[in-house]
Length: 202
Image (cartoon, rainbow, N blue to C red; front, side, top):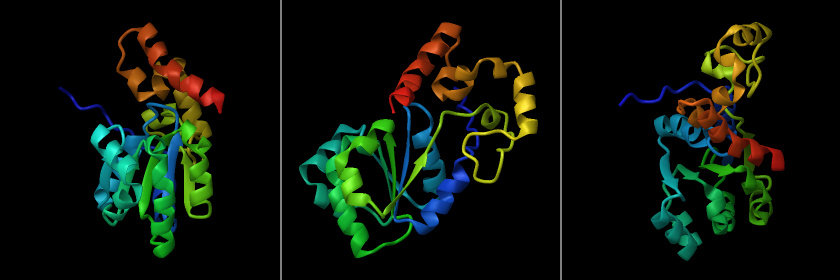
């Protein structure tokens, strides 16, 4: 089976910069917008160890002993779907306050994670939040962003090339990676719709 093609994300340089000077970095955005892929393609080559709280075993361990779970984490860790384990936020604060190493923790979470009170109370001043939007059409075409560090916008030249392309006429298929794997137009719209609703509720 052919592996899905990975498109460079406009947010990647901003993420690398944040990890160079901030102890905790959170990538947040709607479902299926590429948070985990961005975290792993950035973190894996830099020695980060990956944990996901979609894994019931990892989630149970974090809930049973949040302080012990954080204490046992390796030097650099990706914590995926962290909104499922809000009890980790106070122990993360304690670890960061003892040693403010840049890029210590890379978190991902849905748009709802910013509504978790423990996040704001525990990690204020210690965290940089990177908003990840669904895949931009220019990212699919490997066209440049509007400016260095741009997270969503094409350059004027890129926008014209997108408008002229066949897939530029279906923004939902271009935006959500899962939607691009659906064969029927209805399937593509259905895959995109949950992320649209999540974004609209913020």
